[in-house]
Length: 437
Image (cartoon, rainbow, N blue to C red; front, top):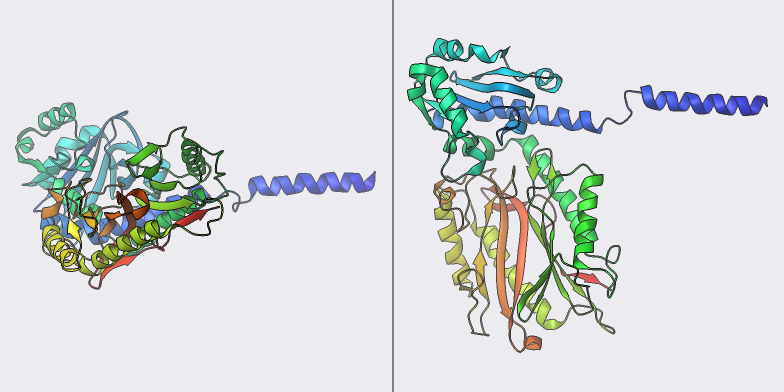
């Protein structure tokens, strides 16, 4: 009896320690502390230059309950009920930061704001600083910089009175502020990339796939469950798990059962610490008696790797992303590849056709910084600076003799950083066709 009482007592004591110990379940706090550090360094090190470069005296971000700006997370979150304003004032080497009508433990304890006040203070607060140019989140091209609703715009202009005539778009400023990276941001994004890679490569393995049993959507749901279990988000929807054949894409994340001989593709990304990845992976399901992918598929994959190698060494900082793109396209042509419009391969079986779409990445799967992608015309005009996070994305089309010379579309995509030396990976990029037995 005494031994039993001692055992029960020890058990209850251990439970009490788990519940009361400050070391118990600290993941939420650890993530918050990292986000605070990122925010502090962005405000201290990046924002002053970004405001000066874009000739902004003040930046006002307006929010309402149920209508949060896309930058709510980046600015520190907080409780937003009625009208709320995050206000940044250019003071030269430093930016003054204030929040009016916003509160909450995490926002206040982060310690990056100088002043907390009520929403009724907006008019006097702005007038006391007398800004000539006030940036607001209205943008023609970038959704992440276009958070100000029409109603909020009207409210702001009415509340500010004569200062309402000094409002200008903050689109370029938001891009510069978000896409110019600090060391801790690069480290956090690299971690997000490694998490994304790990889940993707497990998804394309026999851990998840049993040929003749597992469906495409089974794989996609498994990946979604991994995100849920690990507290990850995504700026995309369902993971795109699809099959490519002689006629192109056969099925995407459907109830199509994965069979031997299938060539599988995967396109997805995770969200972690307000960073979002964008990557692809490729797998081949072995037929009976096979030990590796057929030669035609492997050759097509190797051709895609060659194109990526050219991109990796060619993309360097430039006065505009368009200049960097022109240099890269010229290098691809010089290497013997044929440039085409998206998904319009040539009938010439002797050449590999190529489409490239290296785009901004970071705080969304398709980021708001300088982009070399044809689908981001405005961002092609932005300066491509060192520390820019970029998705190295391409599609290579190579004839496959096993498919009567129909061309295999090999997509490659991994996230990297632009440096003076070229592109450098932040985690191991795709280097092989994954094999499913």
